[in-house]
Length: 237
Image (tube, rainbow, N blue to C red; front, side):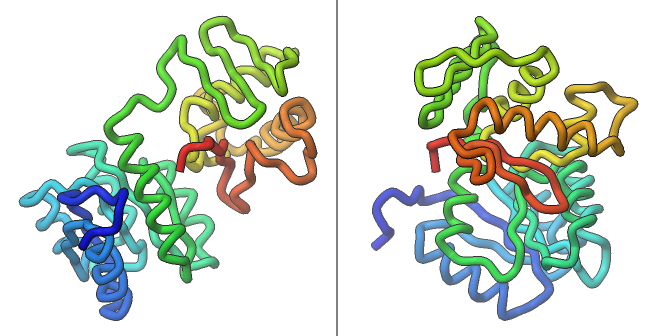
């Protein structure tokens, strides 16, 4: 019997060159109602994806033939299928590159099954629903962002942001629960010629936290992904 709340029929492609990981992921995902396919190499993954058009891809970057980054590039040339990268802790630059190329999220090995399932649910939901339509209203706990009126409230009190602070928050709000790299945020807020000026971003993130977080030292909304970027948390899971 499928556990309550899990959607059956969703096709997931697991791409990893380690047989034990493929088996573990396949078993756990199938137990929660997912239709699982596996691939050991990048070329095999691309071939299977071209034939079955999976709903989500779990992708290890260290593959024996082509790099996982190449797999992301080729998938992104065809579709916006959600891609969650499976990475080792030491591969921070690879994670950044993967996210900049269009991956939706990443998990650092080893990871828990419940965390994986939560990330899958979020990625699938964002694939079929607009994340934050222009003119929308974002709420998370005591934080409220009215994109139409450009107003921000915390615990019912209006918060005044500078234009740059607001634009940064707007980008984050428009992609709830997704990891946005430093480079992606810099280019979205400051312009396409930016990408390496991470100190700009750190200053404005600190300012935002002082204004929207009850405890800026222990943020609940705006989380740091070390060595990668930032993620704005939504109440949805």
